[in-house]
Image (spheres, protein in one colour):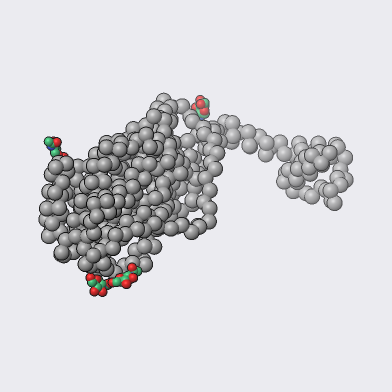
Length: 391
Ligand SMILES: *[C@@H]1O[C@H](CO)[C@@H](O)[C@H](O)[C@H]1NC(C)=O
Ligand SMILES: *[C@@H]1O[C@H](CO)[C@@H](O)[C@H](O)[C@H]1NC(C)=O
Ligand SMILES: *[C@@H]1O[C@H](CO)[C@@H](O)[C@H](O)[C@H]1NC(C)=O
Ligand SMILES: *[C@@H]1O[C@H](CO)[C@@H](O)[C@H](O)[C@H]1NC(C)=O
Ligand SMILES: *[C@@H]1O[C@H](CO)[C@@H](O)[C@H](O)[C@H]1NC(C)=O
């Protein structure tokens, strides 16, 4: 009954648009059915105009086109086809070049799609290999640009949609997404240290992050980095050693959410920055290491090369450039020497931020070697008479 009344009012409203006259008062029609039929007939021209526009005219196929998505392989292609993106879901099927290059599509894809009027974006997982595995990760919005929904899809689905689109097949996708942003809550960095015997105020910091992405267990990213850092202190303790400088372990919280724990630690501790000799982070897997990546002065690099020569028995002596890590970059940018573990990255982006990041990926023998490298470097630098020179 309610439905019938509603339908009736709806009809009245439409008729009033055609005739320009109000025909009902207090919800009760005073018109006869004949009069109503006349009203409807007066809309004939409007109906014809709509039919011509929708079925034969300029608007023909428009709702279908709007529904179908647009597949592009690059931001350049999106720019070239910007006029086709309005009102659509944009799918990025960018090839994997390397992580730092390709991850731009995940971090910026929604912003770039929204700028050309897209309603949502889907991003091919940033992964060097896939067995139908979606890989998630951080993504950014920009002030003044609509915050459209965005999600990662598998490499396989992105490629399939790309093939379908290239054959002229229209693809329609219904997005059902359950992602939510919850209010911030308290979380903590975990800190442990072996206090220095001679220069306790001076610090060598060794670290990994405790949090992981919402898929997988985070065994590789960054359980491995966290646990070889812990192991470095355990090995030194087992051997009854105590370096001159404090060897501090930090297991960062909320790295994946944007280096939140690291930023807080930096704000609290930067007052003592002049007493930080070296900051270290392992956050690119603990597969078989081949050396260190290091950022610091030439003098400091020469010292690090000597330190690494102690690892000749393991043939792990390389000191490359670009020592870095989300959690230690605050210190490195402020001039503190920084080191990260250089290991075999071959498999890292197979599993990164996917359900595949589990203990199955981890190899105890490779972790033994990674922990040995980590412990030798952190202990020797902490035990040297002088801090690493900054210039
Ligand atoms: C509308 O779609 C039909 C079916 O795909 C197609 O044959 C027709 O050419 C399209 N019309 C325009 C104007 O694109
Ligand atoms: C990633 O690829 C780009 C483009 O080929 C290149 O310029 C850049 O140096 C590469 N980065 C790394 C870390 O290999
Ligand atoms: C800074 O170092 C001094 C000793 O040099 C120490 O007493 C103080 O607790 C340190 N501050 C922080 C925030 O670590
Ligand atoms: C750095 O450590 C030295 C002793 O090793 C201490 O005298 C000095 O106060 C410390 N500086 C800061 C900023 O904590
Ligand atoms: C030692 O390591 C280097 C560089 O990682 C590698 O090229 C070389 O083959 C290794 N030598 C042995 C004996 O394993």
